[in-house]
Length: 209
Image (cartoon, rainbow, N blue to C red):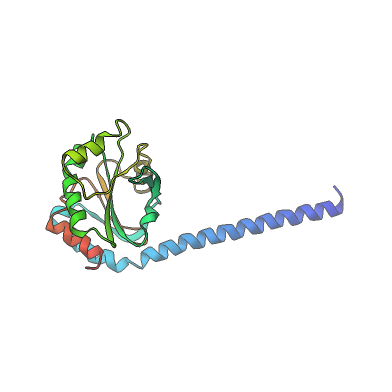
């Protein structure tokens, strides 16, 4: 290799290192920005903590809000959507399946919660993770006249795996309260009476009502 070739190669390596450093910098800045955005809601979780009582006493309020993975699942049209599609709206993400009896027990209450508080600033996002007989969940909901919940599904159940990897969850059902910035405010592993006055007060506080 000539002296000129060596200089060109060295310059190329330096350029690649510089580009990689810039990319890493912006990646870190982006992550730091998300963390700062979540940290800005520290006062909110402080308000929520004493409201985790009664029917929602098992809810684990975050010590500090933190970003949640951008979970992917199917919308009511069967097309993929993500948690970030709900940015600007507080959501209660709930994972359920027809083989999970505690899940089925709480579905009417989730439906009632959507009816009571659902709107431009809040929504219950109940994601079904049945992997077989994909018509069964819709039939079950229709039979019990659960109609206020929009139907979301993940036939591969990857959303559960992603959430388990991020938050170490183990069982079903699981519900995560996520703020308008995509930050986790609280989590519940297990069922709850989401139509109870305790639950309504908890969610209203998260909405600043």
